[in-house]
Image (tube, rainbow, N blue to C red; front, side, top):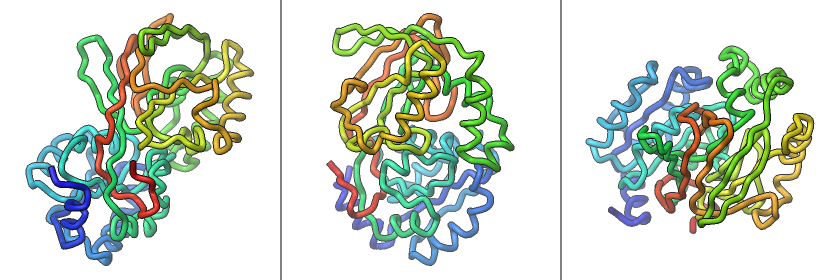
Length: 315
């Protein structure tokens, strides 16, 4: 495993790069040609190009790509593409160059990446290699353990994620999630959650529970000191058993996140948490529905090497 500086030097000196873009994502098909043009202009030397129209092939493509032992893998797409990328690139001697082509781009925001294509390419060209944290999701039901980048969620967001019409998301972006949530809220039921952290048990009733490795949710800052590189998972609920308080808590959370800190009582910070619910519930892992509770979530410190702006505080 090379040091970050050695890997960066390899990339800068014309190292081996591969481009993987999900052209089925909201912006992937529209932006692929322009992204390739900007990357080539920036001097990135690709040994393989993968415009992926069938996301089911992403696992195969990442496995084949790692066999080439590249220095840099540039990835463009939404939550599903990012999840596939971090699953394969965790603890590998390769840097991820991220093109934020999704709807909310929460992980990219936490890395201080520009959300425009030209700015993201400039970070790949002139940024630095950082190692940031990931999370590990264990269904505890015999299903495979999964690596994730940004967040595990339970409750209202799971219903929303599974119900947002594709065309609505395509044309309205983040607004599609809000409209779907307003439609689903009157019929959503609160649930009881039992959290076990360091042997201590805490019970709560809520409509929404989040466990964040990253710093953003729905495109908004969770807390001003939250980071995907802070060695912490941030556990927090939105509201309690009242539907209207879920709405007010969500609005307040979105509006005041940049002023809050993770030291406030509304957050529990840890490197591992076990979650059980009554009734058992499906879990959203970085935008994709996964196994039902009970589940375990733990931090994977400094697990992913990624290109970030020079000013990003790499710890």
